[in-house]
Length: 558
Image 1 (cartoon, rainbow, N blue to C red):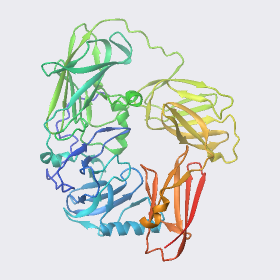
Image 2 (image 1 turned 45 degrees about the vertical axis):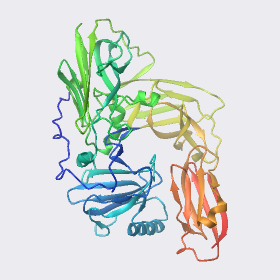
Image 3 (image 1 turned 135 degrees about the vertical axis):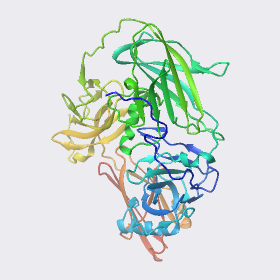
Image 4 (image 1 turned 90 degrees about the vertical axis):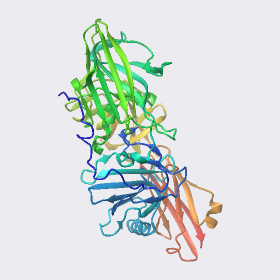
């Protein structure tokens, strides 16, 4: 089904806001390290990352009246995070916090001890923590999966939980006079029915800036048949060296609209469509994000519209005048004018020898000796000619099964089962499927059933079976300083399946150890309200994804 162009600016999917400004969540100048919709592995960035002057401990303030509706503590993701519901139907989120305000922190700690877990996800009653605009709710930090001190701030539609672009509220306080910059484009022959520069594979063309300051392609493009385009570009802002995601992309041919995307809202269950919106293979192989200007049939992102799904038929030997126009939230824009020259030529038939045709719109299954693969409907973004090979090793637990020649992401997951060649372990949970990448083995895991290991996978690639029989390692960090600092610190690691759980106890009772997922450090701070003076025994148990355990014990005095 074709999608028709023109997202009427800010009217189709924009969230209507009653006020165009909010107070800042920080009492320092607003500078961004990331904007809304920025491209990330498997998802779009769902808010703004606000710089905190390279340090932690800045006061974090509620941006408007409301109540704290959710409190999350995790070693990963947003780390320490607060959610505030507001009367206007929005929710604001504050992530990567160092610590919560005193009364919130006391509540969280009590809940952690009650649940005997550092990781908690709490939904306090609406009357427990009412807040006013400007009230301090936390200190900024670097918790969770943060790559450096900052505040992750976002706004959601409370009812749908869809993230909205917060920049609409803060445009007047962020200086931005710099337009996006286009680095290169990809020109694709599509559906086995096209050629670009005489070849059946995409052509990557760099963009250069001439002496007149106008961007242009570094090489000519000729084509015939069905063609698609993609663009690699970043946005920029004043007073920072960061790069940002591009808000608005338009592509025209001969002054006629072909494609338009305006990224200002999406649903979380749509996030993995980024693997169709961008060229997944280019990201996996080169860590390079190209944004497609054509819409694959299995892509359901709502912020894109196109004529003929953005597919350009080159069927005349003429010059096709193309124009990209990229703009940001402040209206800064850049354009790239270029020509695709139609050159009639015979298009060779696609070689499908040894492949299996997987339509995107239905369930697909594949089986061979030692392997079963099931791809449920809705997981492919386009039709796929799937190819398969196996490298056998009679001494290994399993051969290496290569599922396709290039990376292909699933929207959710496919089910993979591999057959064990040598089933030697009594504890079957020690087996698991691993993905082989250029960086080594990535543990996926799985369940044992009648000699097979089954698991869900998120992409095609190379897979085999491994066994993890080695327990995690518990490494005390500067134990000579523990008494003076009144804290225990450990680093916990695992060789393959990863740390799954840990439990700290003092004198047989739960002790709250905080885990920093980035550094794999566990810390217990002396809690004298729960530890009377005298002799105590610390016990730390760490379990990996295969059930292997390591235990550390130590006596200490207070």
